[in-house]
Image (cartoon, rainbow, N blue to C red; front, side):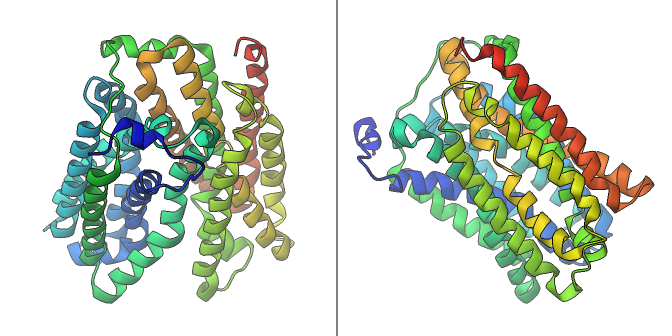
Length: 402
């Protein structure tokens, strides 16, 4: 059993076994969430349903994930952290096992709901280990790497899962996830600290966090930031194919390049989050949101200048997650200062806000594509960026308080 003292005594090294384990868990969560996109045709064929029907699993996952995450995180604060973490990982494993053996679409829906119910809370609990597995010096780096597990999953995990599905069948993609999850649970038992930070706060009182204007500004900034990217990201493949004229055989390479840009974005977000405490790091990103909006507007030129369009997509990938760590710092610092009993809830807000932004951005992107065409997707995404700029400017009045 790992003691609190040992868990915290990480010295000058950042990549200790506990940190690697927590990043690996987020990688596993990301692979499980995104894998359906990569093996969608295989599932449709295997279960004798349409691809559109299987595609609904993606929106269903986000629909369950967003509202359940803060509720589950608030509830988890009432129980010992490690035991709760392990239990939720068991539910996650059971959901993926059910995916692997699902005899029909209805069972697969139940399995995906099981996974969505615990995924957000698992991310939130992982964030609360920061003071126990690393030093304050590496706090923002830890946040950035935990979020980066999802980007690594999209760059590495999903292509590997897709190859396995094409070679051995789609069920083997879930078998791989199951095997890796079992290995991670064993690693959790060996290296993660057992100490808890239980607060004597009821379930409902934790939600007083939402009476803090700084929290709402952070939530809105993430919703607008995610929405600005997902207006076009949802249709990234059609944009590459129809606007930039990337040949079909190179689309997968284009997606990998974009994924690498997103990974850089997540990791660089940790450096940007080191610029102060509370609202300050996110406030400093107001110009980043503005630059992102300008780039999104210029996406309309992709059809006219395809080479510029290709370079622009890489740049947009590099902007996609730059606010992730700064927003997490805002939530955690505000909770620690004014609402210490709501730390688990605060840790869940980034995942919740991002998924709301994904849902809104994807819906707007669909409407724009249907009525105006792909060319107008970028400018409409820029509207979300401008909303993020306005929101972050409003944080300026809270700088002295923090």
